[in-house]
Length: 181
Image 1 (spheres, rainbow, N blue to C red):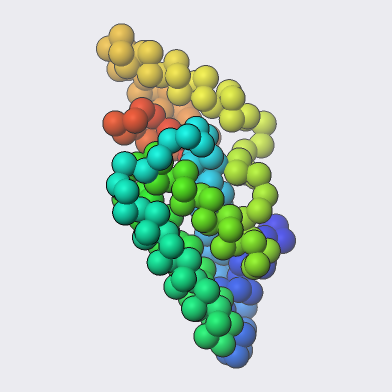
Image 2: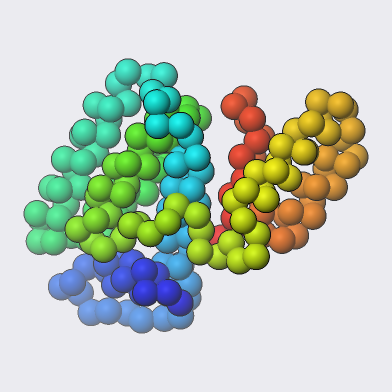
């Protein structure tokens, strides 16, 4: 378990309550951190000049930032603060808007800073031998195969990447990849 997963584990429990340690809970914290970094990696590949389609999204982010600070001011309720961060990420995914994802990633990093979380590279630490560029190239080749209606080979690429722990998500903006947690 990395230090950030351990930190997330501790912060996901209220400081006034006894710490109920289990490796399962530590594994859940590790998965939560990986999900956030997958989101950051995905969002930070979007060009900075892309703005949210919904002009109200920045207002949503401002309200969530206020909520995050209110949680921390309420007896240092870090579990509540972490829940706000997860809700920001969930809302960005629900909107399926590249500009919203990019702005949400900036806010997630900002809110994570006082907790010592989410300040590392956006690329998931679990990436191992594969690089972002290589995965981007494979996704690009798969997109070309799909345009050429070579679905058998495109599906084989998806299946093989899936076995390696890489999930491909097809959407209106194209295909993006995330590491499965």
